[in-house]
Length: 530
Image (cartoon, rainbow, N blue to C red; front, top):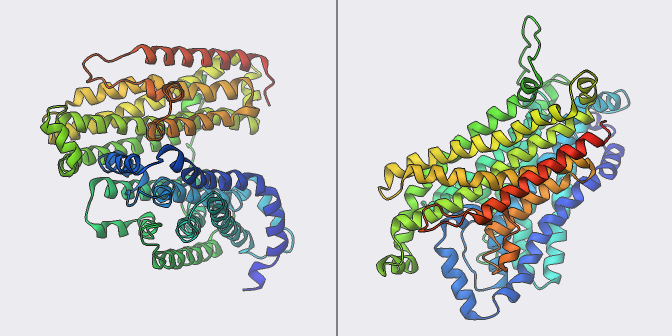
């Protein structure tokens, strides 16, 4: 065993030094998520009445349970922190671990760096073991740092410890998932896709169980449900953490066993063979589709699946509303109808789908710069092809793919919801999806402007998606001013079933999308191409 891990110590030291700048932002983001919850709680909800209203509001909104999990105790800062940061923190910790493992194991094989390292004195299992150990150390640092900062800002020591430990446990488990995915996928991109898809399924299953108020034993169907049973600030159960630790160890052992039997540079899923006879892509438009074909198919299938999950969830929230005294009182007083409440839930769901669609579009935009880094753009532009036409081909895909994804998801949601709830029209849900498209295009255009004009600030594209998520789903909860909420493009999407929907804001949002697209083309025409 010692021989198979030869060279682990110097490689770990070098890899941590090189990858620290990639790990640091994840630790800061998740810590900020926890610490800000404690800070904001006393400010936004200063008295018992406001906290009671908060508990009643969240208890009547299944869409928030889908994202953040059950709100067990909103009368204390620690309970609020456990609700707001628990599910999202474990999700982001898992993403951090996945990217660390794949980046420092399989991606090095694709780049040729692993072959260079293997030419020295290094054991066969060293690279994967170091990648897993890096994820373990990053998860531990995350847990310790988030605990220290949150407690320093007013969080309870024991309650915060349970929450921070769940972050660490999530990172450990999905480090193992990523280790296995790195052995299965044909390259680093496929490995990331497998691991992230596994995480996404676990998150959606957990959210569906929470939002539909299914039987309590269903939560054990997903590892993220195990961490939910830690119940920070409302139980502080340690034994689910032990279960997660055992699962993480088992996954890491499987990953190392698979790695010992896998051929270098290949995955257990062999890459698809090329055609017997080579062919040419007919145009630059076809090239843009060919480059993104794999991700397009995967994402569109995922959106159809999300539509089915959210559609069936919409059919079950009627009972949740009926059991809620506040919602029942509104229906009894004639202020709204059960169908109106369900459609309001669907509007929130379409906002969430819109944010996911924006991630899809921004990913396509970022692929433009990835092609540059791989030195595949300059040879294409060396001929008669203009820069504007090359960028336009990718822009059409970046705008068109999220729009199609929204329509697919909206159609599936509408058909399922309308079949179970006579008061819901499938056409209205599809129109709501259509109304969401310009807002999504604005986020994609922001990323396009950054990549087109100055790729050094391309992180702005992802920051736009994160800011939209926070402002759309959490902004109203924190009673932010309208001008701040209006920064989110999705805030301007009206409920199309309202008596007189206001389309003015959406018109301004569309204008911003056009302006950002113009900036992208003007910048790309003038800047250097790698």
